[in-house]
Length: 182
Ligand code: ADP
Image 1 (tube, protein in one colour):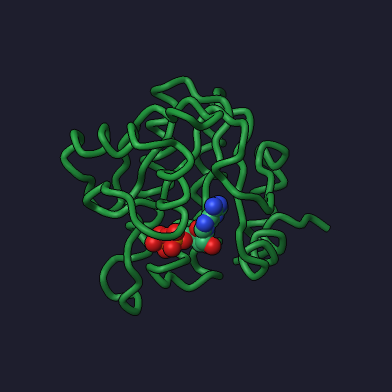
Image 2 (cartoon, helix red, strand yellow):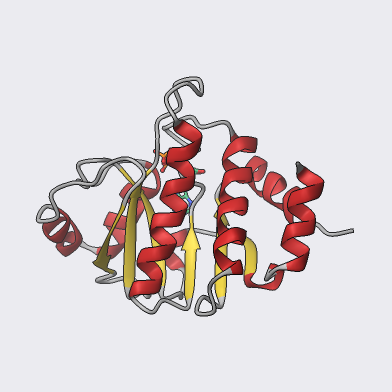
């Protein structure tokens, strides 16, 4: 699996994907992704950090969006952020793998990328969706993130840069394993 993924990454657009250790709210990209909750009402973790950095107008707009189902995505402006867009996606809570969690996580990445394309986004930064409070196993979450992004990039000519933002050393190591080409 790891080997196949590595080959896939090598053959397609590997240079467009970068792993970085950063606070996602500080990044100068067209769009950042929020690991939101279904109510889109702000919360802890990366969601709380994004709301604090974007300012109170973000919550005002989020309240008009009617929430968001797990696996889907909705867009708002970035307000006080350098990023013009925030794409809010709702990752699955991990319940042991029997509630379609893997497909739902892949759907978060795919729906976010499709929405980014609609808004002409050239650079986008993802946090490791569902790997915090939602307890998704890190290895599986990183595999799904990379596989879905690589597949998407193979049929997209618009996105120039995808940042995988790590706030945790374990996640950074896992992404690096997947992207290292010997
Ligand atoms: P979820 O509920 O989807 O699990 P969390 O916010 O709890 O969302 O965590 C998702 C990931 O975001 C975790 O890997 C966490 O370490 C990371 N994270 C938290 N704050 C930030 C931040 N400011 N920038 C980038 N990543 C962050």
